[in-house]
Length: 211
Image 1 (cartoon, helix red, strand yellow):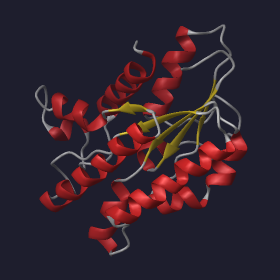
Image 2 (cartoon, rainbow, N blue to C red; image 1 turned 60 degrees about the vertical axis):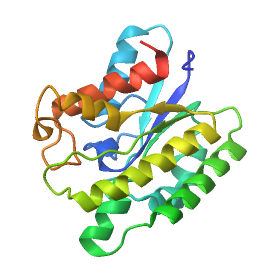
Image 3 (cartoon, helix red, strand yellow; image 1 turned 180 degrees about the vertical axis):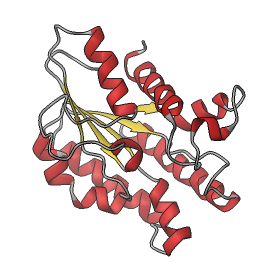
Image 4 (cartoon, rainbow, N blue to C red; image 1 turned 90 degrees about the horizontal axis):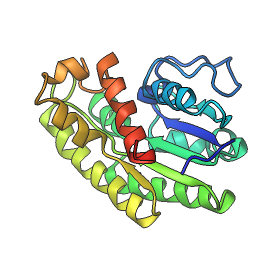
């Protein structure tokens, strides 16, 4: 999927943002300290001759409607060859926290519109849809888990509909909890620790490259 000279764009919320530097607009710079950075670091180290370009445009707090609102500036205009999207936890969190979430049916509708518009503008793009996840600790309650199950089903459905790569982050973290408690992987149930981000990078590379 990833070819020499490709631009690989990571999109999402704070999990993708991971403290990235907004002023660093060039490729392979200001990628933050999370899975996007770790993924880029691994692939750049393994493929130094391929001149790969990685961009991170995740924004903390984003819901699917926020991501869709910036589709032109932060996706289409960047002309990526590969677009990786991880979005959904704030659509639930904002509802339970401030009654400003995005209901699951609207989440599916807007996500579908987002993907259709990206494909129309960039017909040769390769898409990577990442499974939104939560772990049973910190802010996360049973009500969250029920709703997030529905969002995961939406993303799985869209991945099949649009013939994308699917990165099973929730399944990966479910397996990881057999090795260490949920707090080890994400202290608040949402934002990964260093170990959590590293496992995410491994899962992303495995899904996208088979490596």
